[in-house]
Image (cartoon, rainbow, N blue to C red; front, side, top):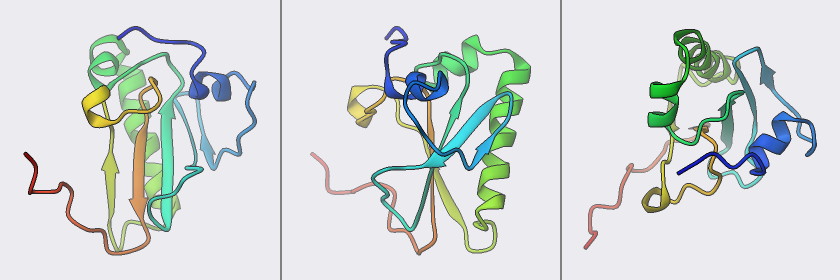
Length: 122
């Protein structure tokens, strides 16, 4: 899948779509999900044009990878999620229900979360 520079996250990064960042640095930005699935539901996106974790890991510089994952940790810590725990999720591709073709990590917390996957799939 190639990168679509007209996706909503690319537009947010360019300032074409307003968003309130709760964190930003040279590697990443973070903001609250507009359709939260937990009391705390934060999205962290890299500033670079990456579609998935594989695209990011294979194409980003070592500084970008390190900076992004440090940003995810800083966001989770700043949100106060370290003590009670949180979940990190990154979807990739159509089978995962990735809705925006720009790598993004969901941080979920603020309550006891259920099981990760439904086990009665066919």
